[in-house]
Length: 44
Image (cartoon, rainbow, N blue to C red):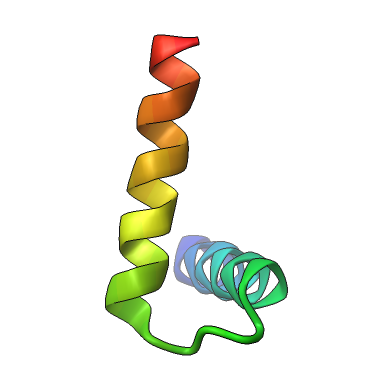
């Protein structure tokens, strides 16, 4: 049960990332952007 939930959450997270950056399929760039957004949120 738990494993299925984790897999669903993981897939949802991946889908969110793809929705945010459909023009940028490079996972490293996406990760950097996510980190930048996170740091911006902390600083604001």
